[in-house]
Amino acid sequence: MVSYARDGCILHLKFIGGVCFGRLLGITKYTTRSDVCNLLDGCNLNLDDIKVEYSRSFLPVSMLIQFPSRDAYEVGLKATRRDRLHRLDMTNRSAWGTLHAYEGRSILLEEVPISATPDDVERFLSGCQYDPSTFRNIFSRGGFPQTVRFVTVSFPSQALAMHACITKDRSFCINKQISVRVLH
Image 1 (cartoon, rainbow, N blue to C red):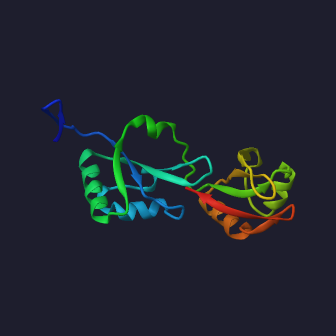
Image 2: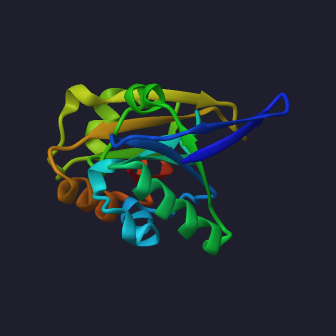
Image 3: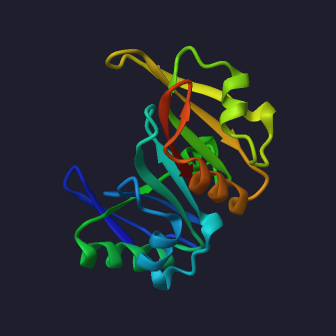
């Protein structure tokens, strides 16, 4: 039962079963979905119940969590209050449905030169098993001395995406060093 005070009246709401959605704030770019599962240990979560919300420059803003019940949300709320580094807020189902889930199967190529063509990106990813039709030029920003962009590429599995991240991170594309990061 949850109580809300409004206009001097106390409104009592009782939640009956069903899923509940929360937004976890205070995450860093190195926080993984398994870290959140460990933080919210008593909530009966698996990795499919967590989606990462990214900003336009692909920095993680928050993680959306689908709790199996209201009681599981309350357990998670208590865990984040003890933690004091994270904050858990309730959110609605529409936020969950509109968010794209990368699920560790996509990588982000950071600081790709603006003059790079899809052939240059394919050459950069040589030796990796990926789907070339999934190249997405997401964001360009002004940089010094030249404008750079981000490119996402999808892979058939998490292991192949991690392999590409490990082998291609800090490699060169058109004489520019590229950072590679796995998107969760």
